[in-house]
Amino acid sequence: AGVLTLLQALGKGYQAVCNYNCKKAIEYLNDLPEHQYNTGWVLSQVAKAYYDLADYHKAKRLFEEIRRMEPYYIDSMDLYSTTLWHLQLEVELSTLAKDLTELDKHSPQAWCATGNCFSLQQEHDLAIKFFQRALQVDPDCSYAYTLLGHEYVITEELDKAMACFRNAVRVDMRLYIAWYGIGQIYHKQEKYNLAELHFRRALSINPESSVLLCHIAVVQHAQQKSEAALKTLDKAIATDPKNALCKFHRASILFATDKDTEALKELEELKQIVPKESLVYFLIGKVHRKLGNTHLSLMNFSWAMDLDPQGVNNHIKEAIDKRYSTDADDDDPFFRMSDGGKHFFLAIGL
Image 1 (cartoon, rainbow, N blue to C red):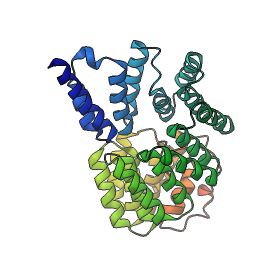
Image 2 (image 1 turned 180 degrees about the vertical axis):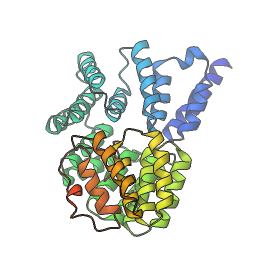
Image 3 (image 1 turned 90 degrees about the horizontal axis):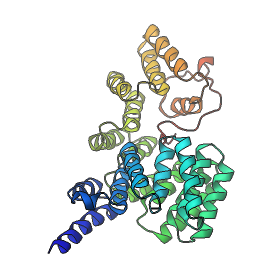
């Protein structure tokens, strides 16, 4: 009876992980006896659940525990490498990639980790080669197809990216990040209705993802459905109140729809979550300028420049101006932005 009870508990937890019922999965697996919970397989399932909730810090801690307890455990280490990519932990990611390739050169996880390592270093051509190497090792590795697809999106090779994402869903129809990738391509091509359709397909698989809800809201706003976009973002924030990406887009849409007081309130809350993010101060400055608060506007623009002296986020500020701006300030030399940078909150989608 004891063994059957244990297998039933493991089965419930694993089923919840597979169904992306992440919070339930964590709850079920946390109820296991300590000696069963502290195993590589169980911890990897809990880590995956946190990863799918975009709680990368908790996922990282669990993956670290797996590495400490079972250094030869290789399953899910590709997810660990992507977790480190999201957290921009270059040294740790490099160490992981080296360890995995030394451990097993014939595992796709090792080459996925190596590809992620070069992707984080902006060496995209090398990243592509290593993701292709992962597929040579395992031609049915849907996750490697997805990582390769996202790398092609970064290098603007959208036809190749689309082929990769379609191969990923051919292997695994329930790989939501591949459906998200297809939506991302349509978004870049300004085919917003198709983008929304594919983001919703991804959301139907992983309904607890606040990030997917956020991307749906962005394309709704692009289709002039701003009220629907705000409702979608409200749902996303209710799912994950600390999601900076969702709060930033909500503030941006409020600003674009002339709800400036609400936008400022959202941005002040966001400032508490990400106090050193230059883009938040940039948008606060734009709101104050629109309201005629010249002093507060200049003060926030100054803070934004202090936080980003190299102009890393300048291309994103251009996109904010293009997508959300309601005033004609594009000719202002202050807003003539140079190229640079790669991400805002790693998933801003601008």
